[in-house]
Length: 241
Image 1 (cartoon, rainbow, N blue to C red):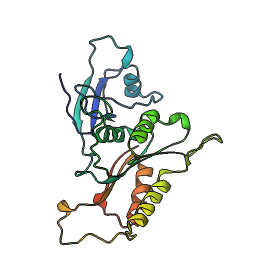
Image 2 (tube, rainbow, N blue to C red; image 1 turned 90 degrees about the vertical axis):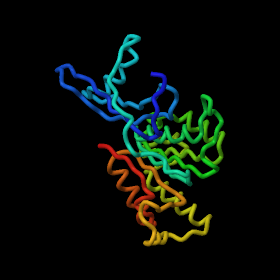
Image 3 (cartoon, helix red, strand yellow; image 1 turned 60 degrees about the vertical axis):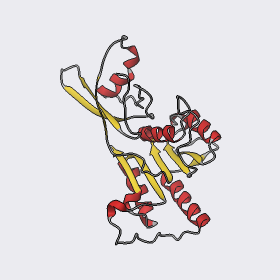
Image 4 (cartoon, rainbow, N blue to C red; image 1 turned 120 degrees about the vertical axis):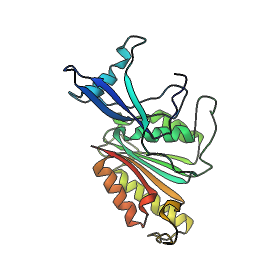
């Protein structure tokens, strides 16, 4: 296969038979932007988790071995035209957001150095417990260094004394971004409701939030944003348990 076309943020379903011959299917967000016939996954080993360990052991498969993958699937994708955007993730929920960032600010291939952000402000708020659990840190830091409109904000909930970055939960830092942006642009909070005469399918907003992670985090961020008057269509999310 010469290419594997997909939209950043989509997922694939991996299918394999376990040791008892039972078919197992799990969905994994694609952790990269389109790049020829390649794509990347972000996989955590789970104790007694068949497919997570199966995928983590793939480098040990012989050349020419195959696995069954269905997709791409899903609608957790960037709304266009690109607007100011807050990307929010915890744990492996960063996978589809990495695809967003790679597409907006490609660093390799024929599109290297192309900026698809249109100068819009892009925040990536990434929460985890410990510094050792921050995925793709060097990559995001490099992109932030090259693109002043990309703001990389990792935050730790159980940081040790040596951590000099942000602390606490993602929803706290998302709230700060929203409040500071509104003050800078002179926008009211809560936001006024959209004109009811505009059909829902035609609504457009100047900022969106894209949230991926465990259900409790997603619900908490959505609640915060709703408190600022954000419309439900401004809040794009994918959650897992």
